[in-house]
Length: 381
Ligand SMILES: Cc1cc2nc3c(=O)[nH]c(=O)nc-3n(C[C@H](O)[C@H](O)[C@H](O)COP(=O)(O)OP(=O)(O)OC[C@H]3O[C@@H](n4cnc5c(N)ncnc54)[C@H](O)[C@@H]3O)c2cc1C
Image (cartoon, rainbow, N blue to C red; front, side):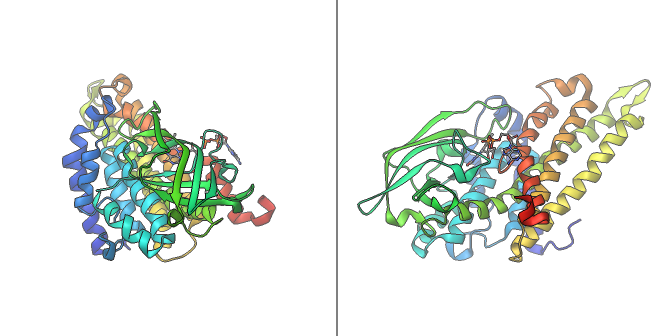
């Protein structure tokens, strides 16, 4: 379908598909039912170069690009959306800002261990009182001795329970966007991982609260220049949204697979339900919209890889792909009838997992805002 894929892209896609089919898909229902986060399987993906494929070769990564990361995330999400979160966060939200803004020392310290899976990371931007309005964040970093003392709280932090690399955004200056800086920390006194937040879906992904109380970080923990943190956070999310679009495509593909298989197997009124247009057309619509969403996703990733502006393209990809995922899961449930509503069939899990793609890394409203501002400029602000 995507003609610009290179041999390397196709190889990493095939590897991810095989790994996901053998090591993730057979266990996905059980892991989700037990809310088991498969940390060992996530780390195994590091051995195969699938965990953060964008990390350069000189730092032990696969030296691939955003397109490769999307291909991996889609394949893993097709097997299990929650497991895909860990990879999307590791590659898209943790490795990416270090590659972009890290010093040579920071890159050498963190990237090889993130590539191998020895260290898993999290990205701590959202707070209890502010999500979409990132510039209003309140976590405070106060200059102290040779570094900074952090205090505050973060909310909804994926991978947080087992993370050993924490990308933290905190206010080093005054109110507004220019007062925010980024930091990277390992586990340390004063950094507390709080409760696991119970969720509608994504039961194989850990989502926790974090709190900072007297967390002292050395000056060398600041990522990028003082006051440039929000710019780094948003540039990171420009890429992360493309990865969420890929995750949504994987969920939609899984839902389509479920609906297609069942429509051929299930008989009603003397034959397979697949012969009814009322069953065929929703499936056909999902297939068409999924193909479009996948192309939008790979287009946005291609722009990022070419160093072109990709904020609006990523927002369009996420807006469309997340809506397709929700629709596809709904079609899967409807196609399975009563079995679709049963927790013993995959359609129900896909239905619960799909919704998050319309919420995190910018809700669908925020994606529309990004697209509108790209079109309308200052008139839309
Ligand atoms: C499972 C899960 C995992 C997550 N993982 C992470 C993570 O790893 N790291 C991290 O930092 N965050 C993470 N998040 C947080 C996530 O990115 C935020 O929840 C999301 O950005 C929305 O922020 P909010 O929840 O504060 O909603 P709010 O910003 O309070 O928004 C509430 C509603 O108002 C709407 N709204 C707000 N502003 C506008 C506007 N200007 N125009 C139109 N509508 C608007 C929103 O679209 C939404 O419908 C995660 C969240 C979840 C649920």
